[in-house]
Image (cartoon, rainbow over the protein chains, first blue to last red):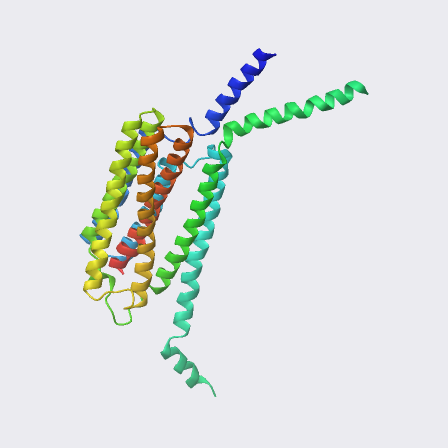
Length: 134
Length: 211
């Protein structure tokens, strides 16, 4: 009986060590170096494009800036924050995706609404509408 | 009947054991997940600040525009500092995994110093802007800019203080389970701040210069 309890104690301790993230979620040297290398490239590209005005085209420069930012956020999430389907039984990933959706709705929604509000309430527009009134 | 009852009594206990084992593999300490949820709610604060800045980003009120006041070399320097501090924190975590207290402290100290130089460069930038008359009161654009970038800077400052606390903790108690868990949370916090900074340098500075 005591032997059994000793064994189960040992198993519990092992489970506890395991559970406290001793073997999970730190990543490896390889993942950190890959993340660092990709981040350097994805930071250098947009800074280079803007600082030496390579493209001479604001729209394409903006598109590449936004794409690089999105890619780099993804790289940081995977290589540095170690978000994956296994960590915390998948709950970190669920929370992350949920937050991403809310974040996009908040930012894109605010910009969209306020842009139209601004456009429709420009002083010129108002007088124009007033002039059209009978 | 008797055996049935006994069987019923045994079954739940095995069921619980199985579930416990499952938890041990998947979830672990609730602190890490709880801290993650905090970080996600912090991300929503930044979402509100980004949205505010986005809406106000062209409200110059006759004041300075991004092209006139942003110094991209400084921003590039700060971006490099923060990226390097991310990888040094990664090295601290790898040293922690191998149980090397001194190495962990060394990498943490380097991370803290890089963080301090980031905040130093940012404060220098703010001082320059204010000296030029580009104060938060000048226009909606500058209010949004100072609030967003300042909030990020305050977070980094909090992270530096936390690193200082962890250095003392490691000195006194070494790498026990609680300290490892704290370092894990601080790791998430620090890398999270770097993610926020990607948004700041891309959407505030670079897109501001292109606009």
